[in-house]
Length: 245
Ligand SMILES: [Zn+2]
Image (cartoon, rainbow, N blue to C red; front, top):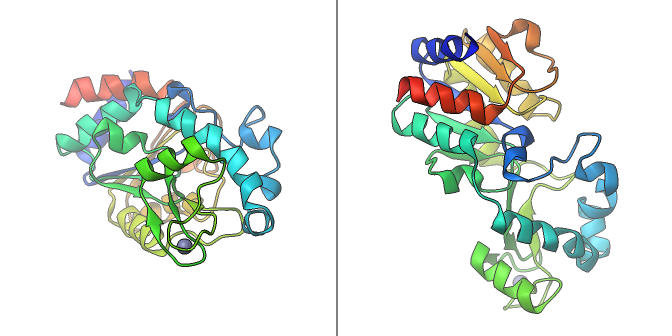
């Protein structure tokens, strides 16, 4: 059955690096951004998640992010996050590269997480560069619609990658390095449409590694993957962790 095929691939191809997208967090009640019912179908990202939008009206961008930060604070890691953390702890997963900004991999216990699109709950002052931790940002939002910098009063920018903004260099370099080293790149809950993350499977394949994909819906790499599963991520990964750990 599919679960044992995936477990065998993981066992036989080390190191295994996992790449996760929005699909891994939907079971935690976090809506994805790009699907037909996703957030960007309702809100225009050019208006709420781009650098020009933030510069023009940072308070408006925070009106969009504030309920999302509250939702993320309440969301809990699901079976897929927990299984990946258990597989890492048992030595079967080297690292998780994630497009998600929700911190659920860390909260499930994953240690080696590379966040290529940033994370929603920390923030940085665009004027003076001061950095603010998650708890501080959440506390500021209890008293204000948009959090302001203690030092200079400017409105903080959430540390997520906005449209039109470069990805964090260190994270993306680390992601590519991991993809090249991986004997197996396991893609979970990503349709591999957003670049440059979408290019990671190519790096693994060129370096002689293989790719497995666990995603509901097609990806550009389906035909080159050793295994493609269109199933519930929590169920499959939970069973794989049960089999290996
Ligand atoms: Zn400042």
